[in-house]
Length: 278
Image (cartoon, rainbow, N blue to C red; front, side, top):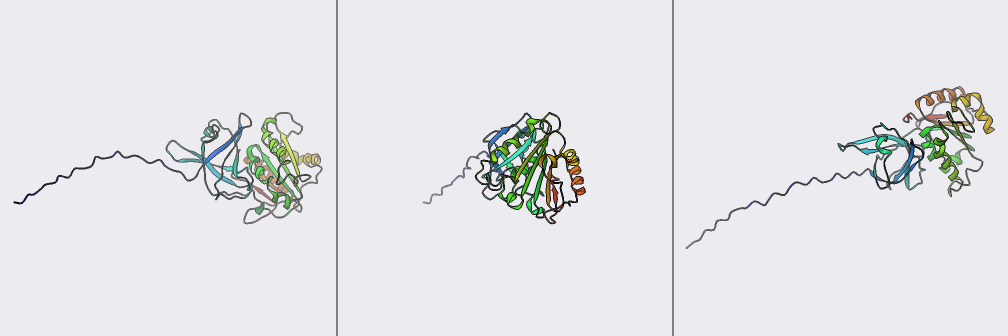
């Protein structure tokens, strides 16, 4: 007698689909935040081991939006190339799409960092010279915060002059703190002695030196205060980072001194960071 067994296939219970969290390879962790005034702050983030940049360049950073898409803006890297972290200096815009959120970051939060830095405020875009001028307004000091901490800056030039113009004295504190710390810097502390000049000015609040840097240049007061000769194309090189108005005015002033605008592909006597507005 033959027996036939019939087996019934039982479907396994269906497992609910679990959406895997999106892992972003470009997220970096905030390591430090400093609020300098009600409208200015700086922060540091971790630096990927593969991330390389030239002093003075900017990079795209930002935060994810509610829909997951990144909201990015160009920020100059304020840290020197040898630093283990990346530093940025920012204004707080209460209704700004990015800075309205970025100003609330704290240690441990994550920031999107894109891997390709670019920019014109680099040594490669200038011809050799004797004096290097950094002209900054507001947070435009950020790329120069990187450049004045680079040994190459003092190896290439006999004198380096950092001018920084803000509305009020408190707005200059980031720059003042930076300059004060350079004396104890183990890498360039000895190099800046006698080579670096810091020239802060204000346009609204009273301070030892008042006025727009453009006006002070045209009046010759900068050269008088620093005991320096007027700018010439033979000896002087310049980098400019500020509002569009400042960039335009300083470009005209420098061209009147005989300097030509340069670029990475065509070095000359001065460069302007067109990506910065603020």
